[in-house]
Length: 156
Image (cartoon, rainbow, N blue to C red; front, side, top):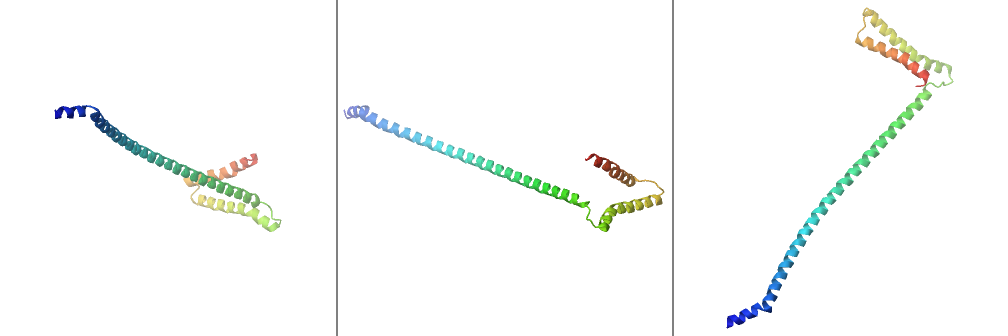
């Protein structure tokens, strides 16, 4: 009798209440574990996204720094080329002092004549047998005096 009353009690609303509470507790435990797993996964994904963003920012900064360096180098080279061209323009400009202008006009031809005379003397001493260096020198001289002047006349 006691057992039948106990089974009747447990089989009725008390059993359903106890089982409902246990099931609800288990569902909440699973939901909590699922939430924790989702938070860990979200945290990992956010950390990876942050690392990628930092790497992209670093690469962009390095690229911009490289662009600035190249632009600076270009500006320095352009300024040097402009300064060289200005110096070349004033190099052959007459000063108005006759002996200075005469000296400036005779230096290059005099040096070229001395260098050529020394080379011809060395060639005569060797019996006018040309070596590799002599042939390169002849080609350089002809290129300078013939081709350079022809291109200068055309304005190139």
